[in-house]
Image 1 (cartoon, helix red, strand yellow):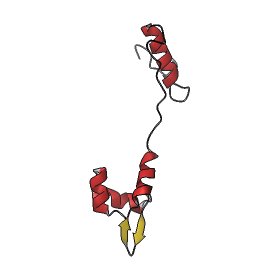
Image 2 (cartoon, helix red, strand yellow; image 1 turned 90 degrees about the vertical axis):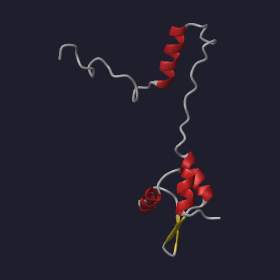
Image 3 (tube, helix red, strand yellow; image 1 turned 45 degrees about the vertical axis):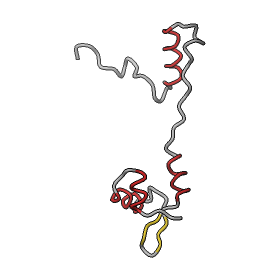
Image 4 (cartoon, rainbow, N blue to C red; image 1 turned 180 degrees about the horizontal axis):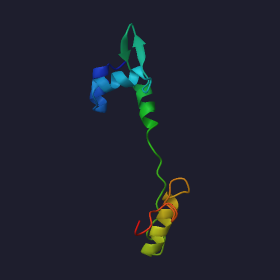
Length: 97
């Protein structure tokens, strides 16, 4: 069964106008039937799953021997990478500037 704009807007808790805009911009999968916009529930479910991020597993406190500094260091290694990490000294503003 296909969903209407109103039904999907209620499910997603967004304004119907947002769905109209997304459909016109092809940002959401939809079907057009004689000018009416409808949505297949299975396609919407797949579309929404595309937004789910897999988060890296954080280190277990007990496995690090209970050392808080080791847990923090392991968490930083798991999260930060060269593309999305901390700024280096050359990129940070200097004191007094």
